[in-house]
Length: 465
Image (cartoon, rainbow, N blue to C red):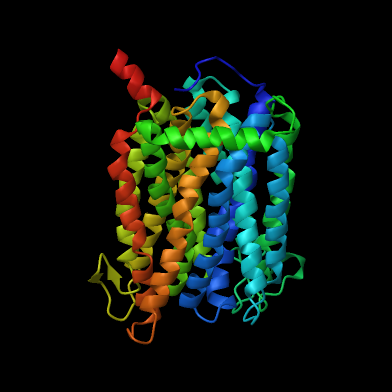
């Protein structure tokens, strides 16, 4: 189990590490979920179902690349020591990918390059997080990791909330009215007809990240170089091979990787396709989706902070289990809601009822809160499974276990949506979208099924007592 040695970084180093989540969360909020993804599906692709399909391929390919390489690079990093050079390299890739999303104009025909830059942004940003997460156990004693992780996730959600308000309130405008969510004309002369406010989410995300990731590079202590870089690949691969051979015999560690693989993929799919689903099935505008995102980020900050306190008291496995149950219920609620139905029951045949919108907003709030808690608790639950010296490799395997189905999840949704949207089945675009996202329910249930086999420090200490 994890090393019990007490360590504490300087206060500014801890805050610098926490600001990484603040810097990166807008990528997930603005690009993956609430602004650029629904804009791409509704205005760049030929129709919403096709947009959901293509978005699934792009994010799935980015996840596949991470799955194939993260354990190897994590083991190599553990063999050499420092994590910041890796974070810098992958941050550059992520920033380039985000900047280039500005080129996604409405109705463009050659969208292949845009899909490439979406995949590049996913690859770079997600990989940077792998190495940043690995720095966590060296910042505070183990007993405080739950609170640290929860506070950092909460801070990240606040960053996502602020950037979402800035983009929707001052940059992204309705093509019909030419006004932003706050009733203002867009800043910088951004053209609503060309959806420049929505497209600007990419460069804005890149600039935000570049500014707020700096404190981590400047103040957060890194591990000293353990050995020369020569032979690091061989040593890293050798250690990874030993880990993989012994992994099936480490029941708790192995079960955690499998369980988190399923429930994190389900959550990522829910985040990725939530805005696209709302645009296609409920007919929401970008402004409505943005309000949904503001609510989800606000509750996500509260949920991550509160989950960190529950983690410290009851252990991370308890937090993960409760959050997964809530997310499963929310997923069923989302899929069963359309403009005319709630829980598959018709509430207004003409679509004139506001109840479906209210239900979807409530579901979004719960998804934000439970999602923030489960992600924060998962980081500390992983730390309980390994020794401190292998933590980067562990987060690499954690990324592998998540990305192994993170690319399968979006690709499955893409294939299912394409299948149900085929002419042979003669289903509407809305019904194809609803049926296309149903795999997330099965993924949540699989994660819950495996969770009882996972041990945490809290359960181990309680058993000894």
